[in-house]
Length: 510
Image 1 (cartoon, rainbow, N blue to C red):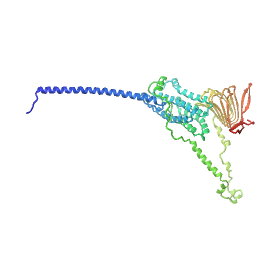
Image 2 (image 1 turned 180 degrees about the vertical axis):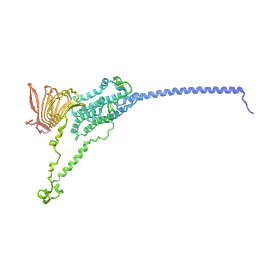
Image 3 (image 1 turned 180 degrees about the horizontal axis):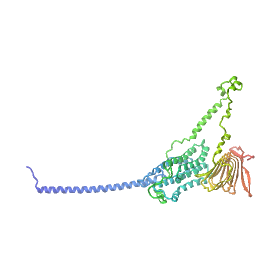
Image 4 (image 1 turned 45 degrees about the horizontal axis):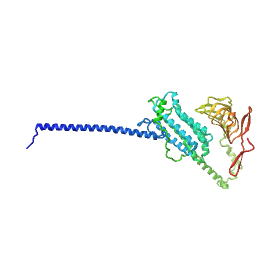
């Protein structure tokens, strides 16, 4: 029997089915709402966790050298800032490591260098985010860097008695290279010039420690490497000058403060893992030269055996005993005359064709190849400037104002009058030099010089005179409106007192 549902039952069944579908729809909609709320909550939690992680990471970053973001959580760094970070984490970090090994004043000075590079990084971050402001505004934004540079130079001046004075001088003379960001259109050559200023002092460090303490050699190489890499960095990213952003707000002190508080980190970076000690190129040259000299001495030390390799020459083969041989051969120049002419040979006189120079290059006054000029004057000097006087003869130069240092190199019958020098006056490889100090100078150095007369002023009587391999040196002291001459000792006597060598000036002096 087939059971047939009545229409009423079908109606009731359809109604029940519709009610069940409505219940299911309500249940599904509620589930969707709860899922959406849960998903939104999860997103908020993830953002909060990400933000907390970012803040925690920011508080532990080091010196702005390893920061991955500068604009909040999802910020990005300009490529040239990333490249600068690589320089900081590479050569600058290596310099800090070697400075820490040497300790003392060198370590303290290096920390100041690190702070100066941090200030430069902050400026680069600002330039990558903002448009270039007016020139007077740029000067204000550069003030933190200039203050760091001044601090580094002042530290050198306060520590003139330091055993590491040449180290401090190398850093102090070259740190103005960080001012490349204000140089255009070619900041790279400016950095090279500052690097050359450092080399003058690092060569002294190498001379003092090259054969006794290689840690100082490593320090020199790491420091000079900073400026070499900075030149390469500038050539790649800022060939014609600092590249500012084309978008964003115009840079201002307010935006600089924002960068310092959000994008720059101030704690020192962890040192990188120590690598193999750097190889200094001159060591290879030294080894080759030593090997060659050793071979030469080995030959000379054979004594009589050195003649065993010579072939006997009979009388008929000797030109002075065989007139027929002399007739066959043209006159032969003596071997001793075939050598390259000495520097004083008249054949080298074309060197006198150099053009006289008196000009300011960056921070260096160049005075070169001046002949019979007694009216040379340098005005408008600045504290950071240096003067280098090279191969000037029968001339006189006056330097007005205050200057950092003066070097006289390879000059003859040359006179120098200056007001004030905050560093050192050096005379090298010269003859018949006269120097008159009108104001103050802390140190005068005389090296490999014949004839040097120094007229001190009342203010400069505390000046230290350092001399080596020189003769005919006299210091003239003002007394009763005139000058009294005092010779500097040239001869010394040394004796052993039982525990140490004692050296005193001999009775016969300059």
